[in-house]
Length: 316
Image 1: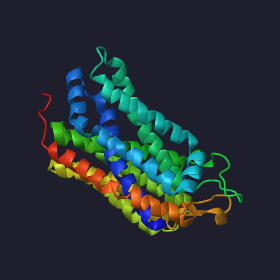
Image 2: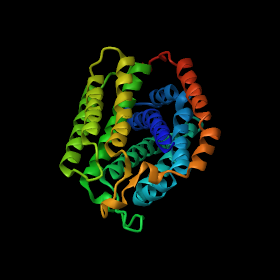
Image 3: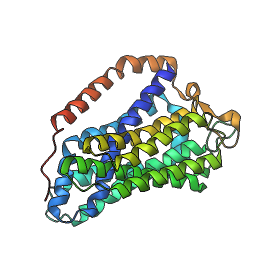
């Protein structure tokens, strides 16, 4: 049952990285849009899906805390600065996007929204890097220190995630508003993602037990974001960047499985899926009470995207 909930956690995380990454990408692109009208139209194109996109962040936290309490406790301790940044960025982005349209003076929100998007994208990239690097879990089973933040590969992963969501947001605005495509941005995102992958190959952390699986999935993500810059159909380009944002989650999970949190101090202290999961009684209760809600969330999200699938009027 722990493996089944690990798959659910992965599915919810994929949903957030694709949909929440879209919010972050559009937010970071606001400074490139000149004039209040263009910025308002970009946020309006995102508006009907915005809250639904952000709900998946709550889903990730809920499944992690309820189904994998040990993973939550040790990961949040090892990556505490990134977790704090993610929470602050999430609150600031939600408040900024929703309050901007009601403000008479919007200059402050035009700074807050991109800064929040950048903070979120960086924080989630750092969490990825920490997972891949491993954390200093001692023989007592607890994390000691913030060792992963001293590894350049962790920060390179964060930078790659920022560019991936930027390309995702650009593809969305091209699809919905007819904004000019940005093949250079897609190429840069793919190049930095490939560079981050090379960094992990050189570092060769002991916690990466299935490097071939993780590498193949990561290379597909690199190819998807690069190809998106030249795909003729805007909808297909957006789908390609969505794949590029989803696959890093699958790649990291595949590379670590059956471990979920590797120890850099004591290999025997590595946390596995079974070791990180709550007890069987708790998982059964979650299966009966929480799991049926997931199809409802998916259906509501799909209906929202279907209703607002048409391209909106361009801003020029």
